[in-house]
Image 1 (tube, one colour):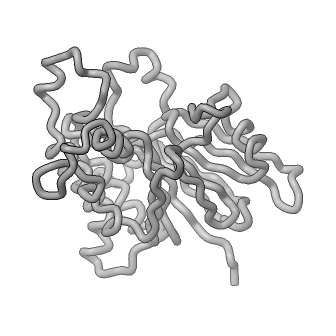
Image 2 (cartoon, helix red, strand yellow; image 1 turned 60 degrees about the vertical axis):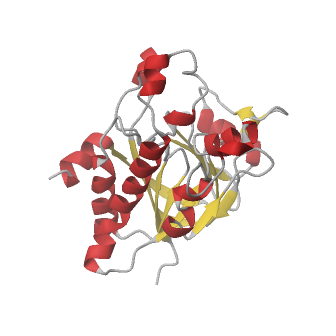
Image 3 (cartoon, one colour; image 1 turned 120 degrees about the horizontal axis):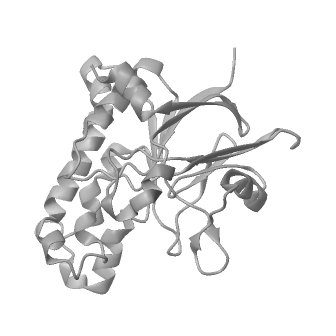
Length: 260
């Protein structure tokens, strides 16, 4: 009997009222179909545009934003992913979540003005309902994304570069992940896809994965960078000791298979 596992990884879904949540319905159907052992959400699932610090000089943008709508849209997205298991009453996979910098906007807003905090009539990280949606959830540690290891793979929203906490990035990003931590590592954040396998590592090969994004639409602010983003989800099969066979499912393929 094999001791290997199957894991599904997605990141940077950026659930926002401006874009419908159909892609989360497709993802839920896929999970119900392939029956992974667990699912890893690497963060930035909630866009939280209402708390961004970039639109303060754009009144039109500010008027269109709503904290309540941001929260409702994120919660709807999480419900859609888990709905097929609820309907079939089949045991669902474990869900492991990570706080991304967009969820972290809630905490930063409260730091700037503590008067905003309130469960009923204010803003609160509890509105994301992470305890309900995830079996394990990893919040920021020391003002940086948490790192946690499952089956020999270390996960984080991003790895920090240097002493100032900015996200590690490179045209050989997957290689940089393996070089930095010396183990199989998977991150999100950049919206780009990169995969590197160091087959000669001992006792097991090490693999670095930058897991693209699960965004539903292009971003007006990103310009040509939209062309560099890879939308979809990663499936890790035969997962054991940080070694796995990678299958990438593009957003278009996901829609073709499960959008009907």
